[in-house]
Image (cartoon, rainbow, N blue to C red):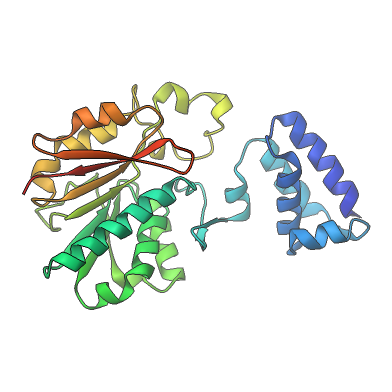
Length: 291
């Protein structure tokens, strides 16, 4: 089955617009470029070209059913890295780049002032995007024993995807992976972390299940934060005093309007601050535990 590029894009754009896609033309171009193994710019420059349409039609059927572009292509470009993505884990979001940047600042500051090795732990790592990027950024520090990176997830499937991403970028030996709930193994088989970097599920259940949110193709365990969206964050902070090192820092990505509620959950004696993203939204809560 073959067709002209211009005709395929026109028909796909119309179908995607009718289905409710906010970016129908972009979706159509991205999927056709992926199906043809070419750049979008080539498609735009050659609307009269005749291409095979079978794979594109298959991808379009899945997209019209709501499946995310990142799952259809099998990857997401995040912080200049190509992250493998599929239904085993949440798709990395642009807003999570702030969490990564704050983690870099925190680890750097600790290495500059302290000669002791630092342990940084990302619970609910999902695709492993944040820890992968940290491993690449601090490759030398990890190799020298100045920094230990741990990534964990309650989902064995998600942890498998994280391992694949680490391996594809050549840093699998720099990260300890653990299949566990939050920081359950801290102080037991794993050390208590100095820095916790967490993008935990924070979407309220009713919102996570709403059809208009289009979250049905991503694993619910990676999205659903309970009735108020704070269930998992609440559990993490309730045990922080016993599972995070003295003077440790927790960097927690949150949803819109959750900052004050999360502040109230901080352990006694902790210092709490909030960082806004580029859109001015309160996005990351920093919880610093007392020494």
